[in-house]
Image (cartoon, rainbow, N blue to C red; front, top):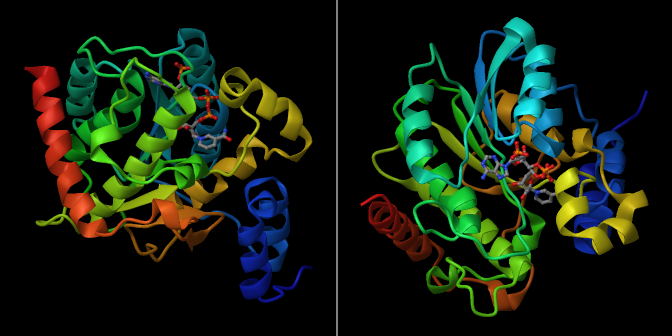
Length: 317
Ligand SMILES: NC(=O)c1ccc[n+]([C@@H]2O[C@H](COP(=O)([O-])OP(=O)(O)OC[C@H]3O[C@@H](n4cnc5c(N)ncnc54)[C@H](OP(=O)(O)O)[C@@H]3O)[C@@H](O)[C@H]2O)c1
């Protein structure tokens, strides 16, 4: 039997090294040094997972079903949705829609609100796009998929996420540590487009949005979290970052290791404090370099909410 060694110093060393924290070393060591307990059961609860057809979401939704939750998996790939539906049987259902399409997202969010109950949303869908593209509403796709659509889901479902344990979880990325928050740069433009930069900026935006939704008055009832999965071997990584994937492959986490932190936030009782950024079952700092530190994080949060409302109404006009 493993004995917790006192998580403080070892966790700090791992986190400081980045590679020790983000790769498979992180969860392998923390599991023992912190005495991780099995994830708690979710019998009778309903959990929605976006991006359920591949990588982290596919591993996550299967585990959630095994923990007893009724799950709703969202994706675009029909074959993967069919396979997932077959695996789930009566334990869940699958929905096909494109989160880049803000009108579709609105319509589906309303339908999700008609589910018998709703306890957790894991807003996991995402992609690092190496080519500039726009949504049917003429919004840059990285922004639409990672920020505008999750914001539509969070606000439309707010009234349904009122149970004491209700949670809304954003799957962000450690890549966001490379970028400061900037409203002006949140929507990428075609000139000098760089997918990794556009991606890191909206992933930083997800962390700011998490705090904004958590502290918004009147409170929505749900607890909001941002969580990042470290570096995980998924189809998304091998497609968008082939060189990184080749160089780091032996050290990458398995999807199950990458998604564990999100599932822990979805299931842990008592409800962990909301509004922050998590990795491997611990809350983490939101900045790693002086250049990315915000002078006024609370102002960022209120400005982001107003900006999202304005950008959405413009897109849907
Ligand atoms: N893997 C990592 O190391 C890593 C690191 C940091 C953050 N993340 C984040 O983790 C999340 C999952 O990534 P992954 O690595 O598991 O990637 P993945 O294997 O490519 O899976 C991405 C999922 O998102 C869905 N998706 C993408 N665009 C969509 C859209 N427009 N509408 C609906 N669904 C859409 C995909 O659905 P379809 O295939 O059905 O279209 C797929 O199910 C992402 O948010 C990613 O940014 C991953």
